[in-house]
Length: 168
Image (cartoon, rainbow, N blue to C red; front, top):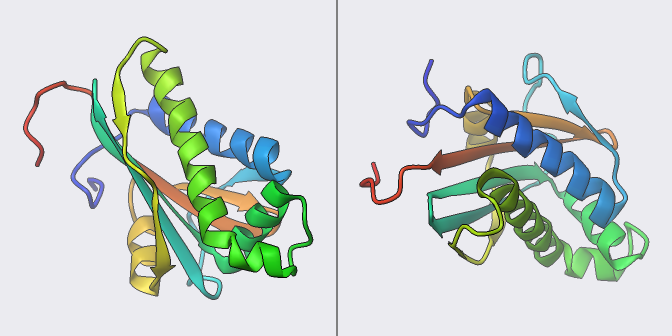
């Protein structure tokens, strides 16, 4: 089965996405994560937040993540150094999730293409999400699933490394 977005990631890029997500969760939010198998994952766990960030330049693509609000608030709490149930964590959850994605995308582009490659990193976009998006990502061949402190985070990347090729 091809990925629902029409692209198939190389195993090395999929591994890079997984490794980098785990590393950035630990470094920025002090959340420890492990790879999880998408098989057996059931419906979405509560309210969901989706974030996406596009890159253009040497290559183009996007990194997309979806997680339950509990995890997004935990990321905000870790970044801000406050309690997960605090007003600050709640008020800044979407911004912290966007910054988490921004740092992750930056690290992936440098790892994949080197520091000399030129990119235009678009600002991350975050929004509340529906269960259909969760299911679409979960059913993708290229899904990266992480167990982050007993919460699931799903991610997928779309990347076209051919400069100048028309988008599909």
